[in-house]
Image (cartoon, rainbow, N blue to C red; front, side, top):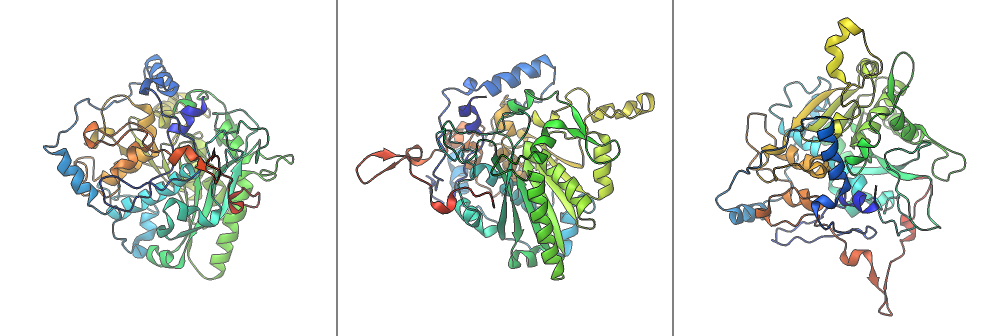
Length: 488
């Protein structure tokens, strides 16, 4: 897949804090974005359309008729003058329910406002893995995080969320899969085998008091475009642990691969994350605190989150472990699902019904075949979703275009917009939603034209170049503290 395609879908978020009509963009410095000439120039869209026809997936595209407001200018003015941040509620008394100990029963439809805020926040933690990622193939640091972990949230405008990053995670794979590994075009690079794959963070004292426990977060980076899944949707299931549990071979490879010849993956992503999570759990439990683990990710990141949850729950019995994933694929078979249930892992899968990725792998043979178990017995090679589903619909938002747009359907920003506006399956889009609507279009073309928000609007000033003291335009060097380090 071309690098230009892979850059379009996830880019750094705006840190706009004013309410002016023209937003101020504080952009990170090392992403190069090329604007697509037309929507159909993207091979991901063409591939997704052809496969959906070939496999008769019956993708539910939104109606082409958009709800009409009588005055879009007035609506835009109201949104421009509405703060994007809502007051934070103290959820300490109900944190177990919000964290899923009752499988979010009676909290999803209608969606409890406390849970909505928490889902959006964990989604923004996942979005940070895209926003801070260096996609620039002309950078010697392509595939790394652009910032030191001590200032990641500050650079992305997430420093008010009450969490502190403690560790970066790096991953590699011994198989060629999904084109997920971003590589520099240069000869001398920070790494030829590894990519930055996410981070571990922990709630600070103030946030811990608000949410009722010390919360450890693991955020996994996903893949950029849905077309990547089609190239690999018929891979094999591989045994994991004891019994009949099996998971997708490629996902497991990314999670567990390591090599002594590499600088950043002498230990696997699995070993890195579990070492840090175990350290934090022992430290805070040793102080007599309640501790939880929340793992989040979008797309491929959601798959890695499940593998991480499986290992964490088996390694640290008694620790409340929850997964909140967005647009995630199936990961394993029914035996894997059953083991997760036995371990007490709580999984909330947020899915847009028009998104293709949650249908993969197992587009034909999946959990729907369970109704034939009495005839066939349990089929170990069938992919099965796990956990509780929160199902969203692009048609529910009056701000989103209708028609077939697989990149837009899969964008994490589209997910966060729909969550922010979701009240219930029987209700209209929430009129007092707070999240900035413009974020939807920063890397896709989903917003209606009446809002006058350019599609793929995010672009670095001068595409990352700076004018030096001699009047020459050059690519700046990274600050020494932002150069990747294998110690994370």
